[in-house]
Image (cartoon, rainbow, N blue to C red):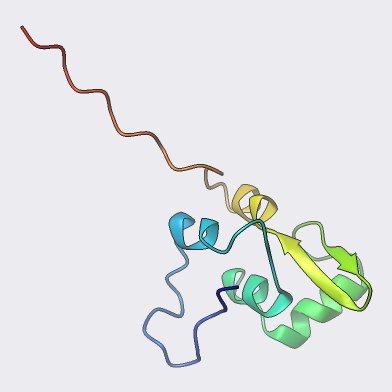
Length: 90
């Protein structure tokens, strides 16, 4: 599963829709926290308080965040836009 970039990485703040979609169907809390520009500890505090910005799935002792919910919260399309149709030949 792709992870959040390392601190100091120039790509740290470049969470594009395509990059978020590439995470798959769910991601972990540290990655979701990075996308929302939250620290890991703040993200866990919000989850425990039921106030994380998107729904959180719990599997045993692990939390997973649905990627489509992240995209929706950020007002990003869940699927890439199809390429434009070429103009009809004359």
